[in-house]
Length: 235
Image (cartoon, rainbow, N blue to C red; front, side, top):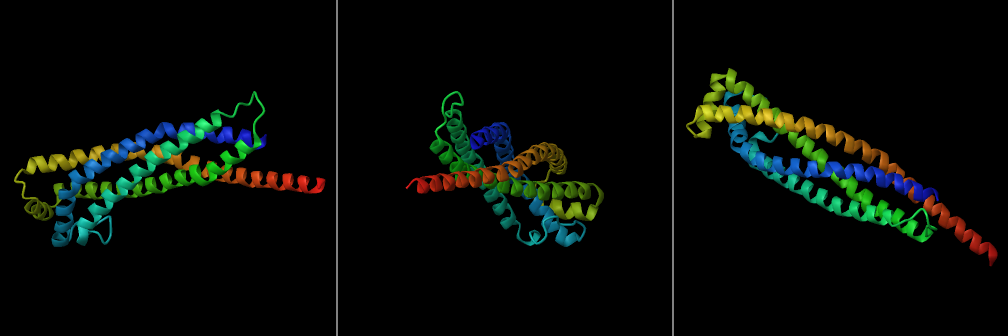
């Protein structure tokens, strides 16, 4: 059956996708922990920028309401984690059902039809949701990295800006603060590059499998229509 072969093709892509989902989950958890760690520096940097008029704010409109930015970041990352775990379950269920379809035996058309609609209504829905959540994570990463890089740059070049930032931090440990920001910037840059590459692969897979699953539904509907006509013609 044509749809059976296409389901196997989708299943092969899903297996490849799942290999990267654990990495996405790990990255989201890492970001959740580190955004909290960055928060006092980003907050102080945002406030100091308003006084020093030196630092461009990568997330326009958020500098005056940093608490909202941090809360939104935490919520976005939490939603991404939930979506990834939910999709792990849905995709595993899909693979188990595909594996039960034995090509060496006669494939039950009804089982194939049900699996096609499961792929459309559950699998693809979860896949797209993960794609959207990871897009938000990517945007959040870009904003955080842009800010940290700019903050790190201005801490080393603008006495006025550093003085304002340091006074707002109130930590009293200049070397520790500067070191943390430099190390955080480097770590986030490296993590972001790895995440970006894997996300591009996932995004391409969604763009490939989405239309393929929709074509399965169209084909399945045509099969049902033809079968109904055949039954009607025998009456």
